[in-house]
Image (cartoon, rainbow, N blue to C red; front, side, top):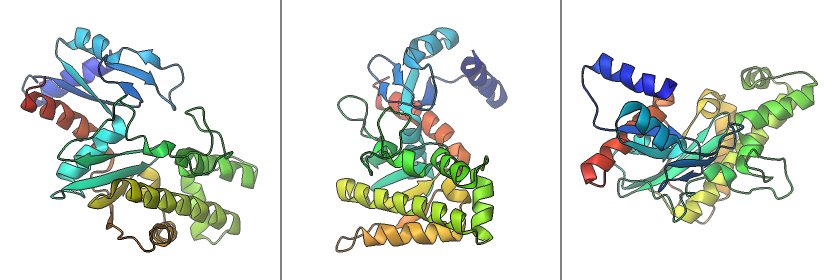
Length: 262
């Protein structure tokens, strides 16, 4: 109901009636059936037929895209990777996700589970992840992972903002946690570059974009170290902020209708 109202409110404010609705949602997704298979960071969402429900509520065709893929699409066409032939986008926020854009679109894979970059396994036997496995990049370096480790280290609740403040103040525990997470992100990006060889890498998300410069320095050091001997694509900060997912969802619907498949 909230999604349907949001779409209707947007149309009223714009003074137009849209042809279709683009929806960015956590995944993995079943694009053929329009179903959210499961959402690692949203308890209780399993085999949820979001497309059918939203189409019935709005009377418009709905096109799904993984939320991180949608953000990748927006940064490619409208943001930090604009004008590039291909790009790789990673968001470091509460969780972690991303996508690869080639030929103007996002390859989803044969089973609709491509682009789950945050679930790249970096440390077998490491901390548990919301996806049900362990040692994923998200479980090691996303905002929730930083808060988990900081709360344990300081023996009280510590969020990412406070952790970054402690880091800038020179606290040794905060320094160890922040730099460790940054290195994991750099290693993850280096591994993804070897798999996809994008024209440019874009890094976004609230945690990464609000992190102190020391975080970025450690990340870049690890990124270059683990691409030693390889040609490293330029690494850019995302430009669209919190709007990336929304713009990418709209772009998803636009491209589907424009291509005629919708």
